[in-house]
Image (tube, rainbow, N blue to C red; front, side, top):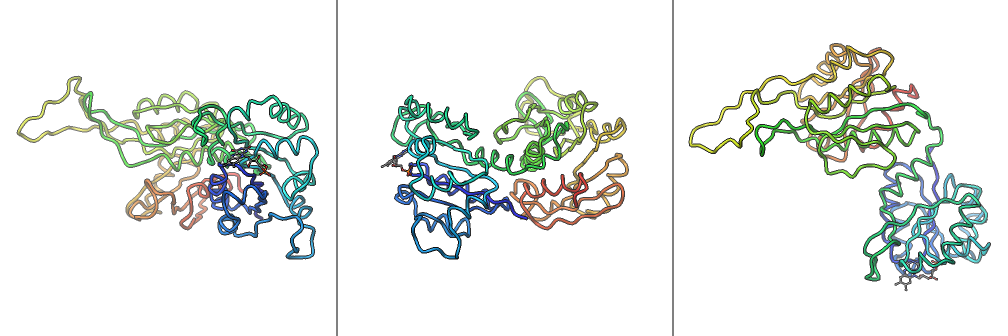
Length: 394
Ligand SMILES: Cc1cc2nc3c(=O)[nH]c(=O)nc-3n(C[C@H](O)[C@H](O)[C@H](O)COP(=O)(O)O)c2cc1C
C-alpha cells in the first residue's frame, strides 16, 4: 500500500522547489496531498501541485467539501508523515504558539503524524531570536527540522536560509516513511561507478557507468536502517547523507577498500563497473604523439567479485552482470562461477535503460534458482525490489 505524505506549502519564494519535491515523491510511489497557505498560492497556482500530485489541493478551510468528511481532520489522520516545505517564519511561529487559523496550521495541530519543517527565509529572518526560539520550542515538542542551507538567497543576500535541496528533503522523507527499518544495524557495502585504468599521467581508459544504480542502492539500504559504506569510482553524484563514502579510482584501490571491510559486512552489493583489463605497462612519462600507430597491451586486472566469492562466509554477495547477449545464461553462469547469492542482470543493448539512464530493466537471479523479471523502472525502484528480494519479502 502506498504511504501518504501531507505536504504543507507556505508562502516563500522557494515554493517552486516544492513542485520538484512532489514530483520526486510521486516517482517513488508516495501519495502526496498538498495543503497550500493563501500566501503560497500567490507564488505558484494550486493547479501545478494538483497536476503533479494527481490529488486535489486544499487551500481554503471553509470551501464546500468534496466529500462528507472534514478535510483538515481527514488529512491529519491520513498522513503517515507531514512535511512543511518551504516553511515560512510565519507558519513556524503560528504552530509554535498554538495558532490554528487556516487549513495548514489547523491540520498540523490535528495530526498525530511526525511533522518535519524545512524552513526557507532571508538570513536575518532565520537568525531572528524569535524565529530561533520558536524552532527550539517546536523541537522540544518533537517536531523535526531540515535545516536550511547556506548560499545566495532570492533577496540578493548570501547566508543561511536557503531551502535545502529537494533531493535531500526527499531522502529524509523516504527515510522516515520506511518505518520497518528491516536492515537496522546491518552493515551493507555497495560499490558504484566505473574504475579507471591509467595509461600514462594524462590518459586512462574507463567505461560508461555513471554510478546511479549503486548510489540508489546505497540510499535504499540507508533508508532501511543499515550502516552503509559506499565505495565509489569517479562519478558526478554528490555524496549522500549518512553514508560513509570512500572514493577510489582504480580496480586495485576498489579491491583493497572492499576487501578491508568484507569480514564485517552482512551484505555486499557490487554494482560498480570495474575495469577487467589494464595496460601491461604504465608509462610514467606522457606517451609522445608519433606518426605511427600506438599499440597498448592490456592484461587482466583483479576479478574482485570472484575473490570475494571465494572468501565468503555468511555475507550475502550480490553481483551485477551487464550483458549484450544471452543475458540470463551468462548471468547464471557468472553467479555460479563466482559463488554469488544473487545476480542482477541487465541488457546493455537497450538504448533507454542501463548505463547513464534514469531507468533500468533487469532480471534478478538467485542461487536457489529464483528468477524475477523487473520491467523498465527507475533505478530507485530497482533498488527497493532488490532489497525486498534479498530479505525474502517477495
Ligand atoms: C516576494 C516575497 C517573498 C517572500 N519570501 C519569504 C520566505 O522565503 N520566507 C518567509 O518566511 N517569508 C517570506 N515572505 C513573507 C511571507 O509570504 C509572509 O510572512 C506571509 O504572511 C506568510 O504566510 P504563510 O506562512 O501563511 O504562507 C515573502 C513575501 C514576499 C512578498
